[in-house]
Length: 291
Image (cartoon, rainbow, N blue to C red; front, side, top):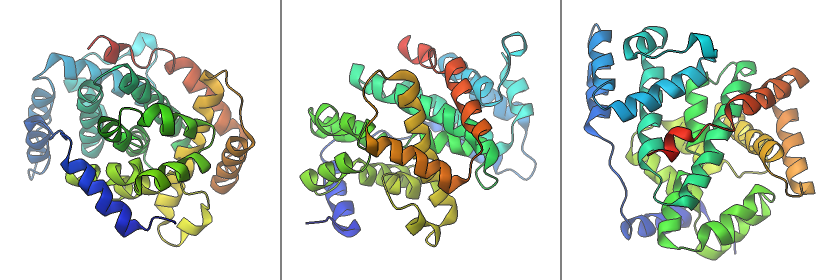
């Protein structure tokens, strides 16, 4: 029996009650307050970001990736970074810095986050060809696509190996198996968590719907969400092609082709995303690994 959204959300809520979920750090709220001032003080914003050296390092690493800075032109200072970014971009990148440092609990978590970071690299590169999806917001959404999986794996130790990993090659059929087994899924948990963190409608809806096969059915509901879901599916496929030596199933091939067609992306967009993965993907998690 197909799980409806109301049931899926209820069951996800019950699972979240049984496990520990993180709250965002005080610096996120301090940053929000500083940004909402009538005239935001960029020096104050840079000082908030600089309070924790580990978070600052991660923030600068992400900023350099998102802004596509070359090795001889990297940003090493918070003030320089905030002067190059918009306020919303600063918030999004700082939040990612915190989450990348604090979410992993074990090796399976780190592998999952590595895949999500690589998908975020590809998605943010592809966003150049999609007017309604800003680069930093796209990176954040793609990175957090499987945030619910990290929490579902705390509820069931076998979840990632049994259900999530098979979704790399069967993004729709394997997801349906997860949904049928739990009568909810990581998508529901992720959407609830992102709403708890006040991360906005695009992110919450995209996380919930990112395993939707019929992209066209999402267009009338929310065109931006439909594009973001297609972008996530395409980015996941490109990451698989670049970093996996496993068999590419007909379902995965179809998913990639459908997303490219839906987004009407030229070949040069796919080539650019693949090049970005080759450049940034292999070492994208070296900061996390040192944590």
